[in-house]
Image 1 (cartoon, helix red, strand yellow):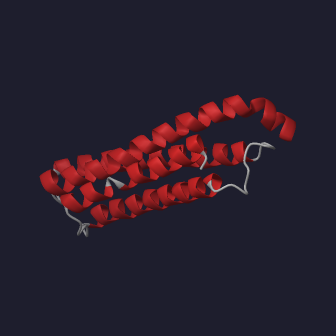
Image 2 (tube, helix red, strand yellow; image 1 turned 90 degrees about the vertical axis):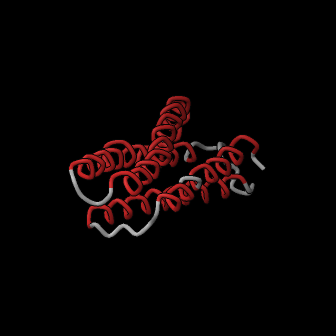
Amino acid sequence: MSDFLSNAYPWIKAFHIMAVIAWMAGLFYLPRLFVYHVEQVGQDGETHQLFQTMELKLLRVIMNPAMMATWILGVSLISVPGIVDWSAIWPWTKTAGVVGMTWFHHWLGLRRKEFIAGSNVLTGRQYRMMNEVPTVLMVVIVLSVVVRF
């Protein structure tokens, strides 16, 4: 199995990067949709239904598969012998960043359910602030992998 992973490493890494880009795009865009939903649309009407459809499709069709692919491909990458030195700090900071992104992904899913139930209480400003979370996590992850501190 490790021979297969070693030979497939460049392909796995390429698809991992593509999955991360798709996932990050969704993590940046869904909170922005929530901002507009709260500030411009409200909790009823035709536009409310349109926003609910956009939010659902973004989460289920793009973000969920991209997150799963990111995890599967990432675990495949760290399974290649000699790639990760677990005695260093960087794999642990990267792992913490990815776990944080996964938490944020699920937090967004819960907020979407609140919009469906008509029970959203967060403001556009709060969603704007939460929109910075994936940026901070991205910085931690990229610096961990590239600088390997």
